[in-house]
Image (cartoon, helix red, strand yellow):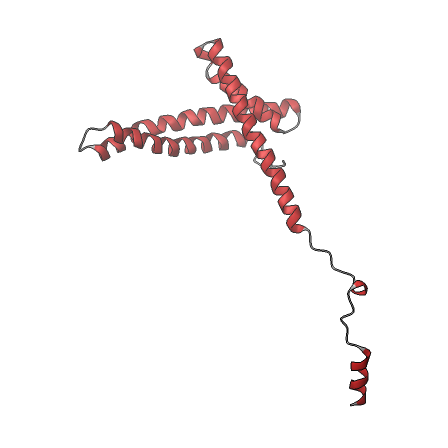
Length: 170
């Protein structure tokens, strides 16, 4: 559960916004390439694909960056207010980010977006906790060495006394 060895808060916001922009740009390029190819007329599929990626992918990247930057900002504020860094901060940050990004759509949409953001982040944090607990158990089991048996309790497989006497008589 101690995954919080990240950059301090002011730098974390910029880092998360940049990472979110990159993910949005790459994911948007993949998504918009399919829609550009599908919507392009026959004989212009590649040019339609490239044009759609060029026009729409940066917008998707900026939208992801806005979400990532706002999420990180709220997360850092939660850390400053609560004086601890735990999954509850991320869940609250996801809910507030979802609500604040849809504030112009009205209170019902804002509440639904906030709930959806909180639920998604709760699932992500829950999966992270389950994975870290499972990995801890696996690493613990691998680090356990088998017990060595006490030689005094082993069956008598040592050479018999008759073989010792034969050796001495030779």
